[in-house]
Length: 90
Image (cartoon, rainbow, N blue to C red; front, top):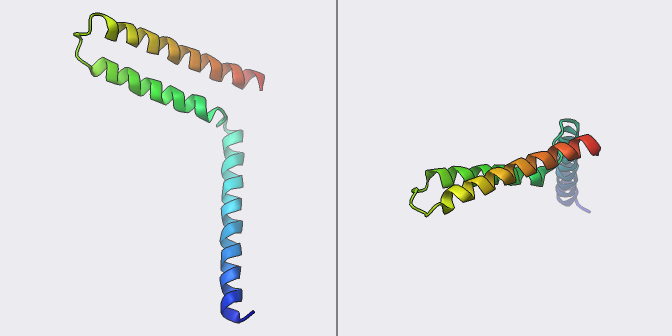
């Protein structure tokens, strides 16, 4: 193998090693700081955004907008409880 190919492979392996190390560090930090439940936390963010949109919407929906806000509030509460449960049991 000539020097150009050897240098190219070396750089490629070095980058892969650095990427693997960065991923491992990020994973370890996430586990250590309670970064578990990423999907539940994402759902919580989305529910909060949905609630904000419902609050901003015009109030002429025959009570359905208000009911939707109540349901979203209940969903937010359930997601929080799920996150808390997982944090205390796993």
